[in-house]
Amino acid sequence: MIEFTLTRTSTAPIETVFDAMTDHRAIAENTRGFRRSTLDREGDPAPNGVGAIRRLVAIGPPFVEEIIEYERPTRYAYKMLSGAPTRNHIGTIQLRETDTGTEVNWHLRSTLKIPGVDRLMLPVFKKVIDELLSGAITAAEQRS
Image (cartoon, rainbow, N blue to C red; front, side, top):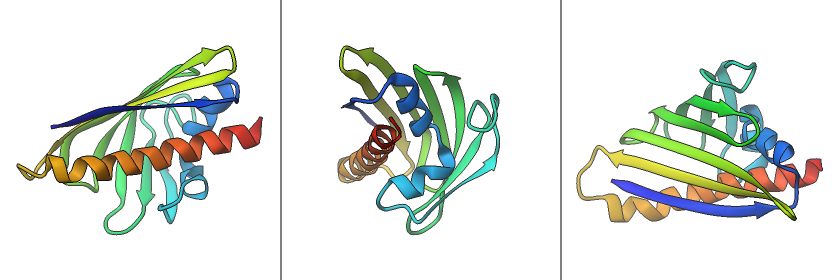
């Protein structure tokens, strides 16, 4: 199993950071490494809430993820439906207001379908999550 948390801070207000992080259609334009990001199904509240299905295309098969929690502006979570050799792949993002902006914690927990490759895949997962997190924070700071 792979499990880790990445923490970043932003000078943008918590609502702005949350909105940038959950703007599923804009992920590709905000993040290096992704060629396309689309919303296959809108969620509740529309468009980015619970039940939303996002598709992220880098190389290879797209990552298809469903939003399973959405508590604006402090928390959301997603699960991977397809695109990576994982099962029980859950990302939970928590935001907290600080004196200077917003702290974001992205926790990932994933079980790989191929035994024994956890150590090889850990740096890959960390790099992808770091890119997504950095891209969203940059987008939020540009919005504020």
